[in-house]
Length: 473
Image (cartoon, rainbow, N blue to C red; front, top):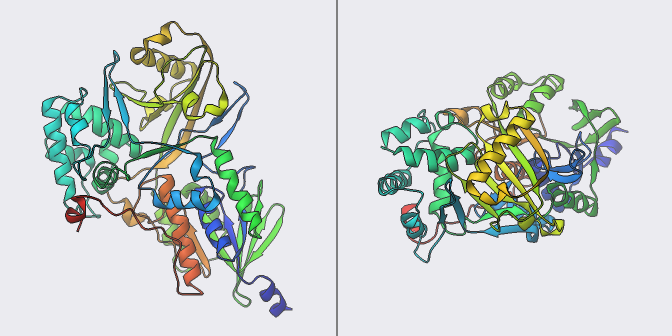
């Protein structure tokens, strides 16, 4: 009986968590021939990158605007695997707008990396001459290796490298702190340096910016179809209560409210706070308490988005960076998602790295966003606001303060035949969709290698181009 049960569950994997980490791991393993059981407590896939019908405005909206870059090789690899890579809108330019409307564009030129962005930076009205020298000084310093165990905060590093108030407010706080979704004094320098090198120095391809042209749940719905086509199953609205390991037959039993799931392998792809809740319901393990202590040290940072529908066109820009105000980013969903056929304009405004904005009441946040937006696009004063929504993603990302790498666990777990994924594990990347996809591929590699020593899922980083090929050696 035990031999028959073991044969029945051979090469089966239960993946807990249907976010980007869980989906990327599940799809990679399914393609490799494993029978995957992807378990998600909600009624849709995507996790923190999802969309839904907002009853207040009767519109399908994303829970927050998610972006990727050309350097996100594992996320792009996952998109290619499930066949949605053509549903990404790509651009290589970033428009910065000052209150009053003056615009500066950052983007690549024909010069070799890392000089490709220099011409537009030098001509940018948003930065003074002193600002440009300060940024050049900082970029040069970040070409040199920065110890991963550095205990220096980004704010202290910027002070030490004589950054001007203009660069701090209009570049470091706006672009870098927004990308890492944390205050400057709560960011580890190696992560800031990684963002600088990947987005601005390694190559023009690495810094290209991508945004989904369809709702996120539609984008990630392709993962469900992919899994089913490869003989795997997706269990939505399924809450995992506990997991048990049977050493005698080498199998896991995943206990859910709708019944048990049996598999040879277990892959846990949960956000760190969900991992906290599951840990007390896992089997005792030698290093289980150590993992619990690590998870307890992680901290959330919020991201807020204000969705606005107007009766007329406000701008033809697909997106923009808004300077010197609380609202940081504007995404023109009427342009980015033309399928909507909006008669007027649908704009999404994103405010990151600010707990203060997240504490505002709905109408306060919408009013502040409208008032600030009018400083950049005066047309708004003549337009009629038809509807609005405020979305607060309180647990959007985890923080990356100095010392965080010592807390990020590897893909291997304290339990047999069990592996970890999630943007918070040791990927070398901050809290991003790329970190999540990378973690899924790392976990799939670790699982695959436990039976066959042929790791093949992790997609290599883009190689530096131009002069950066010599500098990065």
